Image (cartoon, rainbow, N blue to C red):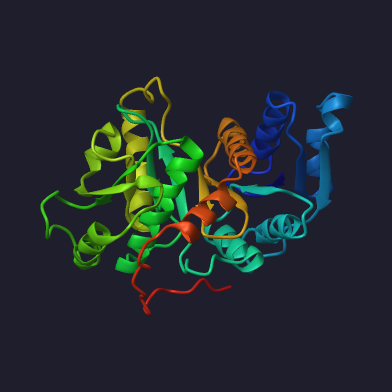
Length: 318
């Protein structure tokens, strides 16, 4: 698994610490550390000889940024993507810029043919069980066709990654009555009601923010990346105000990227060592379950009408 050593607000220190924790916690885990050699040595030097044998290094450095700006670390994430593409690594984990990581993965690994907007998928602990929330930052502009595709992705992901039987899928809005919400949601709602979702999933209609916390109405909540990211961080802030997350865990600081030809996990830019370790563990879990290939196969094999095309969807560009 390729780990971007320079991704994140507090990199490389927290990434080094997180990588150490991940290697020590999982005896079957092999890491490819992508970044400056001297940073990688800080990881390998702290390991036992047996653990060290499971760690390799691919040298890469941050390129200089514009005047008066910090160096850009996107060269390391591109090198990590290249490692996945050439088969040196099975998966990629980065806490760097979300936009840079999504773009590098989409361009370097390729997108699925029917997914123009890859989605970041987070799993939140809710009162009634885990809730899959997407998109949480992969693409920011809501389009009806994109929301419908996200519903297909989310239903398949919930079934494969979390073994949710017949996932219930809801569309996040400002009310549950038909006709609520902005134009993209009003357009997507009837399209989702008519869509044939994979894995026996069913569309339950519009849901509200508190449904994400309770999990009583939906196992998968679909929204655009802007709203999803704001919601995720608002829940995180609410936990902080309440003195900490619930027993089942707080908001995840790692999300899977769906819609690209590879296993990619993006960690929160403010991730701490435990968050990086959790992101690495998530990527290992997804790869071992063959999540990317199985979700892709479920979408290909689902007997459904294709989601409507939206020529205004914004392409991922370099």
